[in-house]
Length: 314
Image (tube, rainbow, N blue to C red; front, side, top):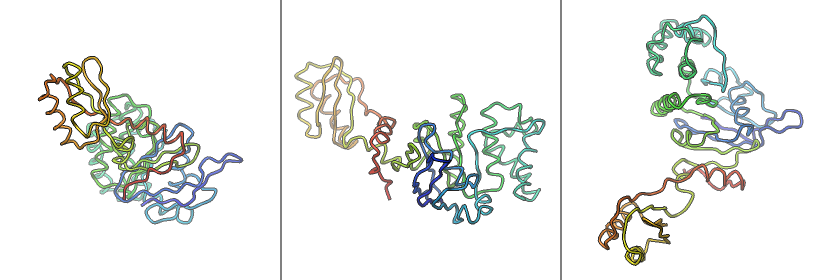
């Protein structure tokens, strides 16, 4: 659905995007994460034909961005990282205006506008003025605007930028609905954990280069072949040592007051066996849980080492 081949963008002597090779499969959500200035916005701008590539090629929905920009624009709903809103225009009028730009028939546009306002949780704001909405509501209205011509692809640049925590949760819920609807979505953010919540695959950019691509499932499991288990409980030290040493899947453990940290190489079911072993040995277990994988630490390690070995699962 989206493909780039050695895509580059240069402003004078500054190389902003360097030899970008990216593939976004139909019906998936692909997140580009990177620091400010990594080249994310420039990349998205080239894909939606707002910026011409210096070299290389890009295809969106089968159309080459330089050769057929009109077809690309018809295929894409684009939400920039910053946007202005019109004074003295109501939400319904705003959506219908953009529908007219894409020549959506008026009866279809009216019905679709009502449906989309409800879909983004603004059904009671049809007659509200756009500039009177909160930032979070304006972001949701922008998403509805992106969908007015029913595009095959959505390109969203920092869709949660500037939102308060509640509005971020509302935006995440809408992005998950887009995913469930089967839309192809390319979005950027510098907040990694937000992308992990909604994306199927992630690309890590730094200094204009795509340094690594990984499926979210691979990313969650890439930090180690083992799991870190935290066990909170009470027992004499020799009881802890005997019970943990008796499980061959325990790679190493560290005892500390009130519990133990365990590096474990077994499955979830085998973790349950370990828990039963501890209880049977006489450990008064109060909590037993697996530590979440620190995907942000993984991101920092990948971008620091220029590692490109973490490939998306086929």
